[in-house]
Length: 494
Ligand code: ASP
Image 1 (tube, protein in one colour):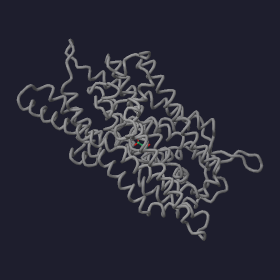
Image 2 (tube, helix red, strand yellow):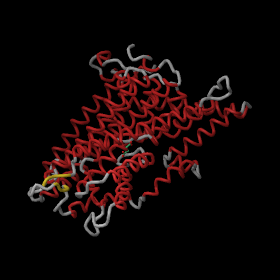
Image 3 (cartoon, protein in one colour):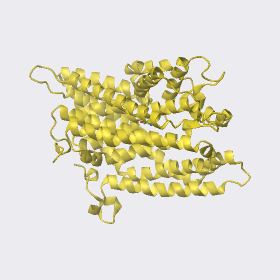
């Protein structure tokens, strides 16, 4: 096992952090990054001119923070780290899948069990996504963060009587991010399965097409025994080994990269949020929304997932949390499950002991299509926005939200803020299903998206960690049901 990836405690390296196991180093990086980020944020808020009106102070401080030398430096360090991770993804995913499928061994009946593996994987993804969305639905209905009581004691949406033009700046950002997305774009998931141009798919990081093509290549390689096929396999193995060596190097630099990412993100977010007077206007609603989303994500992370580990996979959940620590901290810092994929694969194979065959198949596919945290968040966010407009959805309309949240989460890319696109799709679908007159003439539910911007980044960090954790739990569960015996010490009580 890679020494860096051992799960032992930091005392092993004494006072020399560079000798600590990786997850302790990353945690230290996170703490140092948070300290630097706070310093940048507090400094930027202090720099805002007293003449700037209250509603513009957040934006002004954010701008000052993001133009400071300290921010630019740490942002650069973070970007280089994320780019290092992204650099590995295409060769890692393609070679590991090709090798895993090409080397599938035949059972007595001539089958390889590949169909069964696929079935279990998709079944796990579907089941956990549905559970997570229902969890989000329950929490958002229970807390009703978008509703408040007016002076007359009536229940109204938190946007009641507010000037929506306050979100005009954010609205522009929404348009830039999600421009032109329609509900039918969900069908693109199927289109992406067959990339017309492999190089283009690789260049754009469209993993789904690459995964399918890699499976096909592996499948046909497994069918041919001749010299040319052997050469291709050996070459693929060589590229895989090289990729793993580079992955190790990038991982060694992860603590530094995470200092950069957290310092830049926290610095900018703090400066933007703390003086933002929308927080005062909607403080109860927005913070309750963010708190509710985190609560539901935490229930999924700390209760649902361990129950699956304990009763389906029959392994010790605590060991799995420890094994996945580097990947969870990387997911939290990057807010990108795609960029985290190399770390997830290392942790699941080296620390959790899942075979390469299972990990290579379940994890890349999971990073692309299985997003429990995202699906849950989409549901909470969409219903919160409806509530904010004073609309309480019927059972049928909530059902529509659940279905669209599960389906759109499949198509959401594993990059920061990608859920916003899916939430637009959900809100458009709900708007179409609302009876005429539910909203004032010309008002679109989508314009409430600005409400989500305030807490988007911190919530993105949390939901991405949940996305990655669910993929890893899937890999462990499937490996165990496939009879693998080396996973996490094998039994819940060992
Ligand atoms: N950032 C998330 C991920 O990469 C996607 C999202 O929910 O925005 O998994």
